[in-house]
Image 1 (cartoon, rainbow, N blue to C red):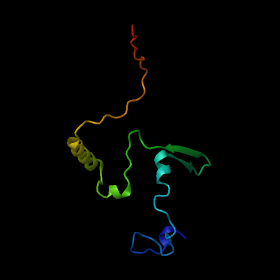
Image 2 (image 1 turned 90 degrees about the vertical axis):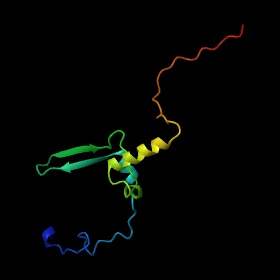
Image 3 (image 1 turned 120 degrees about the vertical axis):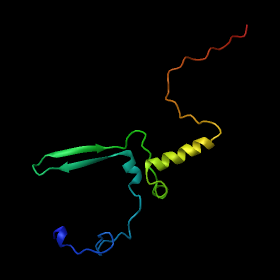
Image 4 (image 1 turned 45 degrees about the vertical axis):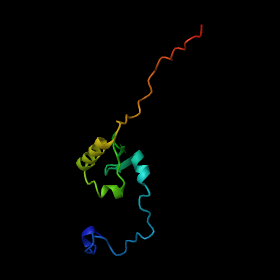
Length: 108
């Protein structure tokens, strides 16, 4: 049956036979954050494989938080106001660098 021949309902084009009662919300959320692979099979028989990973520094908002912050601008504005309230600037963890060992004073 072609898509145009399917009966449509008023609620988001969901068909009555769809049953999500046994579904688990967010089941694959953490896995998708780590990245995933898409395999596209072309009509000519060739295959395209694409690796999809979040950009470095990407922040993923949980669904309940996303309701209050619909875009990057609102998130950044709120975080900047919280930074102003923080008593001490918190530094991000540094990457490990090669340091020279501290000199030990000899007791003479």
